[in-house]
Each structure stands twice: as structure tokens, then as C-alpha cells.
Image (cartoon, rainbow over all chains, first blue to last red; front, side):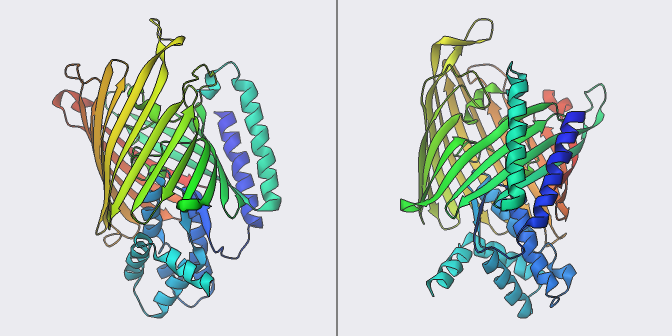
Length: 129
Length: 332
């Protein structure tokens, strides 16, 4: 039991150290097969919006959880890496809050946009400009 | 199992060394993302001498590397059963965005077809079911693929892929199976409904009379599945029917699983329901099992999850084997 716990501590401390050095800018596009990495990126989107102090932090926190669950269910279940577009997702959430949409409406909208591949389309449209 | 072999100590040292080097590099490069998930659970089964027990169910270590804009690599190492059973779960390289909107995977990966992993594979609540990977039922173990190469093309309407694998099975160091096994998978999407078929053909080493694997004789293995997945409102529903022939042994199974988002009721809550039928030997008598698993998952905060699951056996004579889990998961 001692060795596994030491391994967890060892590995965990590197994770924490790595996160200290992680870039604080939202990436354009991310491929991942790991829920934790997906979770980190979505949390970063929420944190970016919260730090702008335009909206209530409690409303923004965990707003991407239904989207995360959906991606895990559909993509990770069939062992396909997920592609997410953090900057696009960030802009969609921010704009929807600015339009006065409720948290529930935004949660549903994010899942719907993922189902319809709209994040990818918005990303492609931005990069064609 | 990797650590049950003679070479385990050397391999373990090599693995730790490789991880340490990769992790050290990650601190500077930032392109390799390490992560850890630890699952601690409370487990109740009234048939056990100690019905209520606590354990570290699983710890997973990941290294996810962005090699370039179009290529990634992943290493996943897991420790299970109170952290005493360890294995290299996945180690592969993926080249994305190839022609025909395709990707190529090389290495040791999980089943690339069907929805064989229970729903919410990363937060699964239904690991104890017969059809789940890594259970004691050997009949479906082949779906833990060996080292191989898999190509998949994703279209608007049609997704298809095929691959070839080699080796004795996941984490088997002894490589005396030189047969190349083939896998194939095709899915057609109709709006929010996907329907697909999958298949496997190969040869596995036969078993000697004492249960050890024979290096000299083999048996033919075939498996086929029909699958479907649909999004209905806040629910995602998936099902699969699969059959398998392992030499003269014929098995069959099916499952219907549904994830339902309950965030309108309680924020970040969702439920997973799974009905599973499994017949390990079609010609055997009374060996079928029917299980219902009902799970609830609640995201407490970023990195903290709570899960509650009931596994109910629907046959009368197996009801005493019903189980309850409560689990806390922490992601670092």
C-alpha cells in the first residue's frame, strides 16, 4: 500500500507543478482522450469568465459540466478522442450571459451545439476570415 | 498481468523511469499533460464476511502529449483493487486529420468499436457487470485489444474503421501468438441516431488441459455486434447485441444503457441506467445473467465527484448477490 500511495503523491506533485507552469491563455483547439484534461480545459474557460468579473461567479461555475458529461458519454465511450475549441466555447458562453440567458439555457445550448458540431463550424468560420 | 510476471520488477522500474523523465520534461515544455484520478469507495455486499468495506478502487495515471497540431500520444497506467493490481492500460499514438477526415492509432488501445465500455467510461458506475472490460468473464476479454494499428474515417453521415492487432492480449508480455487479428466497425448517422455494426476475426492460443496457454495450437475467434446510439432530449441511449465464438464455445450478450442529465433538478447531477444480459455459453443450461445497474453521479466541484450505484440481479436465485457502492473520486 505504501508504494502505490507514494506513486500517487509523486505523480500528483508533478501534476500540480506542471499546472503552475501551464499557459494561462485559452487554446484554440484541443484533442484529448482523458476526461481530466477535458475537465481542466472547461474549468479554465469558466475561470476566465469568472476572472473578468462581469457575471456572478456562482452562476458561471460548473456551467460546462453537462457539456463535459455529454462529450465523455459519446466520444470517450467509443474510444474516440474529443476535439474541443476552448476559445469558441468561451465566446459562446460569455455572449449568452451578456444576452441575459439563464444558466440552464446556456447549459442546454452548449450540449446542443456540441451535438450539431457547431463549435467546429464556428472555429472553421473564424479561421477562414 | 504486467506486474505478475517475472519481469515485473524491471518493467516497473523502467515505467517509473520513463514517467519521471516525461514528467520532468512536461514541467518545461508544457506540452505533456500529466493527470491522476483516485477513486475511493465504500462497498456493501451482504454475502461477504465483512459486508461493508472501504477501499481505493482505482488510481489512474495519465500522460497526454500534444506532439504536434495533428498528433497526440497517451499513456494510461492503472492500479486497481486497493491499488494492488497494476497494469499498463493504454499506450498509443494518434495521427489526426489525415485524408478522408481520418485518424490513425498505433499502440495498445481499447476496443475501437461498439459501446462496449460502460457509459461514461471515465466515470463508470457499472464496472461490476459481466460484459464490462476487465471482468472475470474471459469470453469477452478479446475486446481488450492487443498492440495494433487502427484507421478510422469520420464523415458527416458514415464513419468506418478497420484495424489489425497482434499479440497475446493486453499486458501479456509473453508474445507467442503471431496471428494477426482483424477488427472492423461502421456506423451510419441519421440525425441524432447512429446505427452500426462491428466485427472481429482472429485466432487465439488454445488452452492446455491444465489451463495454461498453448503455444502450438490455436482456436478461431469471431465476434460480431450490432449497435445503436441516440440522443433523445436530455438522454443519451445506447445499445448493442453481440455474439462470439471462441472455438466451440458460443457466447452472447446485450446491453441497453441510458444516461440522463438531471441538472434541471439538481445542478450537475445525472443518472446512468444499464440493463445487461449475458449468456457465457449459449448451449449451457441456466448460466444466463440479467443485471440492472442504476447509478447517480454528482459533480461536487471541479475534480470531485460522488457516485452511488446499485447493481441488481434480476434472476431470483442471484438476488443475494446484489451490491451497493458509494464512491468518491478525486482528480488531481
